[in-house]
Structure formats: C-alpha cells, structure tokens
Image 1 (cartoon, helix red, strand yellow):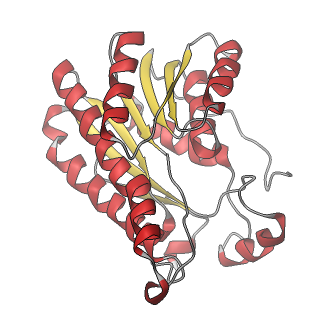
Image 2 (cartoon, one colour; image 1 turned 120 degrees about the vertical axis):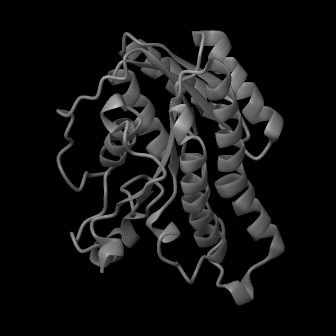
Length: 258
C-alpha cells in the first residue's frame, strides 16, 4: 500500500507521562494513534475486540520507552468498557486520556433498505460504544479530580450525510453532538471532550480499486493518511489544546467546506 504523501513525524506533542486508553487501538487510526501517543511520552492501553491487539501492544511496547498494554474489549458491552477503564488505572495508577476510535461501517443501506439488525449493530459500536466509553472515563476523571481529555472519532459523514449508509451517518452524527454535550457539561471540571471528523483514510480497508473515486471527492484530490489523523488527535489531548472542548474538527481534505 503506497502512501498518498510522505509521512511527517516532526511535530512533537509532550503528553508528560499520561495514561491513554484507546478503543479500537489494534488497527487503523487507533493503532496509528497508539503509536503517536507512545512516541509523545504517554503510556497506552489498547482496548480492542481483536486478539491481534496483544501482538500490536507487544510490538509497540518494545518500540518505545513508554509502556503499552492490551485488554480485550467489546465496546458495545458496558461491563467490558468499565473493566477497560479499571485495567488502565490498575496498570498505571490513573487515567488521563481516552481516544474512542472503535468503529464499523456496516451495510451500505439507504433508509428504505435499512434493516433493524444492521442499524442496531452499527449504532451499538459506533454510537453507544462511544457513549459508554465517555461515561466511564469521565467518571474516572471526576474521581481523580485532575481533569482529563477525550477525543472521539466521528467522520466527515457525521457533519454531512452519506445517503447510502444511513446507520453509519446517523451514528457518527450522534457522536458529534455527544461530544458537544459532554465537552460543555464537564468543562468546568477541567475535562475536555473533542472529536475529529476524518475524510477517507488510506488504510487496508479501502480497496485499491476505490481509491481514485475517493481522491476525486476530496478537494485536495487525495485521501488522508493515518498519521495525519493521529497527529490531530494527539494535539487535542495535550496541554497545548487546553482551551478546546466540545469541538468537532474536520480532517477531510476540504470535503465538508464545499
């Protein structure tokens, strides 16, 4: 898989030894963010449904001086989320950052073709899973009394509709407003909640045969790279971004600006 642009690793954000919990951290944007946060002086807990998460955590743990751990987690199950938060605190003493990146695309159904099974599956992971993670992470932040930062993964299709996938579009739109609600509700306690809204990103999940089509829908005429999204997420979770909360930031090559 060739990159659209050369990888940039120059920007540095110091997370000052924080502990970060990353759902969906075994692959895609979650994995790229785990890598970036470890390099930015954070310990990381990868919470993922895939058993591949253990291999990824071991690989990243060996790569950096900071520590990376794994806990198998189904984000649609409340007890799993609760346990993942507890695990992070048990391993590192406290929790300071959460990135909610676990997600699925589901079936490409317009609303007249949608099935309840697909709707419930997509929303359980992409929307309810984000809500549960935000709930238990914020509960931990409040218990610690030191504030904290959350970054949720929405999508450019949470800001504008994708008519051909109503479940995904609705779930990601929900994440945007959930972020605004949580970010404003706890701002006074030093808890910041933001989300990024990526465009189409160059990962193995995007077929080579589809990439040219996706390039053309972005005004930049390319798709994004995982490190570009991971950098924005890391910035939003560092002290440089401490006056930003409740924001939904498009990282989409200009798609939602036209």
